Amino acid sequence: MIIQGTCSLPRAPAIVFQALIDPTVLQQAIPGCERIEKTGDDEYLAHLKIGIAAVKGSYRARVQISEKRPPHRFTLRMEGKGAPGFVNGTAGIELKEDGHNAQLIYNADVQVGGLIAAVGSRMIEAAAKKLIGDFFQKLSDVLKK
Image (cartoon, rainbow, N blue to C red; front, side):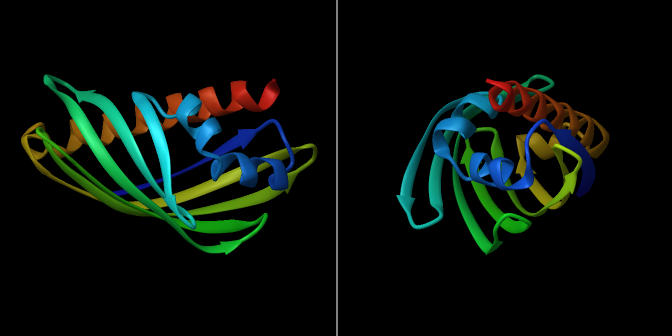
């Protein structure tokens, strides 16, 4: 499943870039995130509780940041597993200056399996877009502080 979009965030690209790789900020912004642990250079382990329709559960997600070109872009790779199934994906993140704000452009390729896949692609895509929207709203709130 391909998920693409843009978001305007209330800080310069350099500040947004740093926020997007800061575990403390991410823990506050990611919906359902209980904690994030740094496990290596640009590698993290996230503990999440997320539900899509009637399929709810806990996940452990390994996240790796690569192809960093601060403050303009990076690639995010994620492998998440839990009782409801798995979610794997890669996302390209690009930041552009937009006045005093940053314009964030994302392009993700996501695969799901297990019980989650039984929900159906339309519902998964709608849930993913809602989670992404919630993430950007929370990130925006954190950046305004």
